Length: 389
Image 1 (cartoon, rainbow, N blue to C red):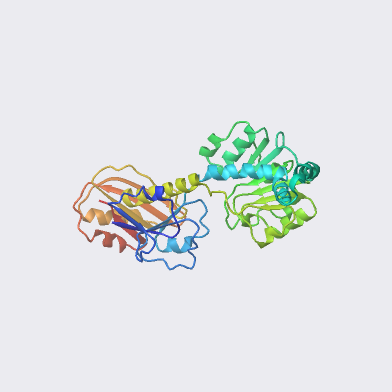
Image 2 (cartoon, rainbow, N blue to C red):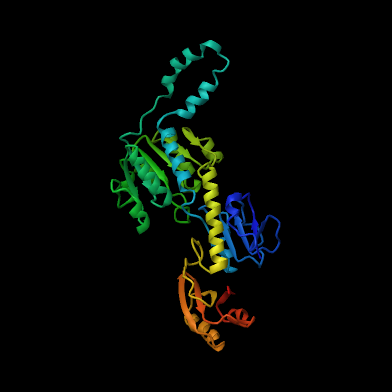
């Protein structure tokens, strides 16, 4: 029985994908086999030695201590694309909020509630203060063409916008989903130069922190509208506040409010609602659960942020998985241990990601002696070995 610790309220439909005869979920296990979470901050948490996997029901993993997990041989999963449609729809709402002062107009109208019969006349008189522009025919630069970015680009194009995408790392799979009416820019500078709207859809990494800075803003059109539904730290707040103050940026819409953004002139701060839909929460939970099951039951790794992604169809017999440092002669040493047991390797797959290598091995023997896992772990460089049966 695998014990799965839930650190947040996880969608019950997703947790229902765990078969009850094999998995037990709860929020009070002290020695869990796996952890599943959403926004819980794990950085100050002591990781039990029993933990073999952590699954984030969402795309971002900045709340998980990735390096510590890797050192302890813990595979960390995320769920890219599971909440993409929910985020896409909010980005589209952000486009409309940025082009027309809808939020300002609503707040003003709310203040008229004591005016009685005068409300309609006051509305007609005051509505001119909240006029805006349409998005039809306007130019949109989509920075990052991952799961969300491609959906945003295609949807905006269908709404009549002229869309340019920029992503030097776009995958073949994502490129195939992109409408052929989307223009692709070779550089960030060329993508944003003539854009009326710029939307960020890139991950937060040490290299992308402060991605939108004074220098980048300088290359945008005067009066540009900037949308950030990816991560707050992608934008240099001081530079954005200055650009808003002097009108270089007409409107900044962010899904990541903090004290600085709340004080910005012409900023619209949405309380991190990108993935806050029933469908997104369900989809993320289902994907996280399915990935944990693939790992525990078949040894496959899908959507890991710290281990290589490895999938192999089951050949038969017994399956063994081994994780080790990505150094020479490891495969030979692993094979030697198995050879001493008199087993025949039916199929084997080895993949690496930076310093980590992962092996899936199918053998013909089913009655292995109990100590073989420990023998594999005694190989210098091996930090995880499991027999799946």
